[in-house]
Length: 69
Image (cartoon, rainbow, N blue to C red):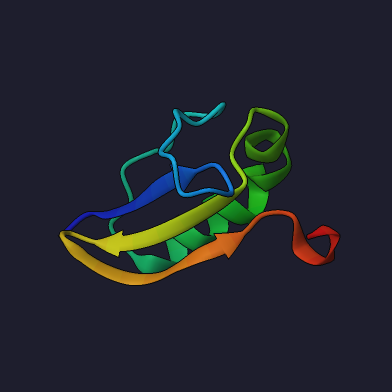
């Protein structure tokens, strides 16, 4: 299965990410990527993300704003 992210505004509306994700073969790769680019995603209009393994939601929403909310 491929690991993917869903990118959203705070209200749950899906948005296009400011940084296009790679194709991830492991959860760790997906999480490392979002850890590296979260500031760019936030500046580009993404407020929160969800992680999926194929069609299965693993977790989310996870805010990119941290304690700012």
